[in-house]
Image (cartoon, rainbow, N blue to C red; front, side, top):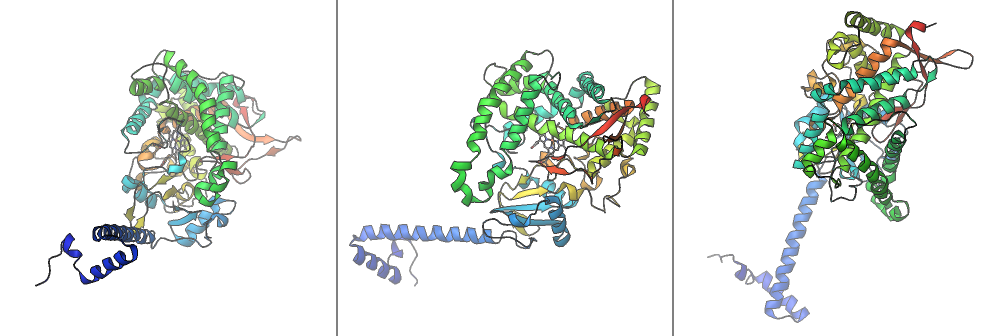
Length: 538
Ligand code: HEM
């Protein structure tokens, strides 16, 4: 009869008996001591085997996923990326298909090149793919891991509440109430530039965007580019962008570089900047916003997270900072790229002006954003400009929240997921002859682009505001601003190329103006155009 297997009779097994004797003879331990050591060894062996099993599962990660050539130990594909990432990725998509994996140092990154694939991974599998890469969280204002909107975690209740409050403050009703103040910002922009002189519209547009954010958050605004509030805000935005440039966090991707962190590491500088520069700046703005008449976002945030108490705002800095950073240059840059594209297309401008003029002669004023059905060709042109020059090249990267399976492949936790915005918008199946500037392809749709983000992928007409649960919370504000500025500029001006010293036109186009990739936004290199008042056109 076979012996029953129990913990105590395990030691009666001949092989184990001999093993215990060996330990006793070599260590001089008692019988009980030997059994304890043997048990500990057995547990160790089991743990090791389990770890081995786990890591062999990890080795099976990404099996079947295309990967470009050129990966090197330690640095991964770093040396194969070349100076122009979108071009390299376009080449890799052509060689490898709609998705591929590459390695940046030791980090795995998946790039998604078609709307369908992106929807599948970031929409259908959103449960696993809606967090952000942990190293995007470069700081927390030194405050117990309070996160903002951009890096908050979807399973965190505070994040859902925050997102809801922000969406509410930047939504249809709220912005309709603020409409007059927002329209004035756009009027002021036209007053400033409508003089027929060469101008780079980006800087004055940055002030319009900043004022849109300051008004909705704190019921305040800057009065000119010389206003200290404007100067300090731009200082905060640009310093933060520079401090958090991916290159400064190379050791995140290439761990061996950590040895240089004490010399070149940036983390301490970021935290000092946030604590000593940003906090006092935001304290002033928060007080201003809480003392202001009427509703604004800071009042609802303080009510929700601090029960309306004054004086303690540690948990509000991060969400506020996110809005200022995410909302200012994105919209200004989008409008700038749009004006650049139509500055060489008087035919397109004329069609838009006919629509606006017809509305003005009927109503005595230009349309509001909610009357955009009256200017369908202008809306279609904005969409076409946005398609041909997306404002972000890879949106804001998502990350895998846990190991999960996709198309039979194991995607490990922390894999970065990057939707390739440029590739998605030149997909010939969705946009026939994608290289052609053709606003007509969007003519039948004046819905907001933000609402298009919630549709089925085949019904979406563009993807610039992102995907899935993390879709941009500021899309309605951005579109309102784009509309207000476009409609006012084109009702009063023609946008034409700049002039050189001899009076010759210098056309600026997507081909002549370099696209400069930033942390998330891709900005035009400095260029100039002119806004010539329509009645005074030579
Ligand atoms: C044309 C202008 C804009 C563009 C192209 C844009 C684009 C984007 C994109 C692509 C994302 C990432 C979505 C994803 O992860 O899939 C995003 C997220 C975000 N945007 Fe925008 N955005 C714009 C304007 C704004 C404005 C005006 C604000 C705020 C006032 C804003 C605030 C945010 C925030 C807070 C997030 C993070 C959302 C989250 O992680 O849940 N954006 N935006």
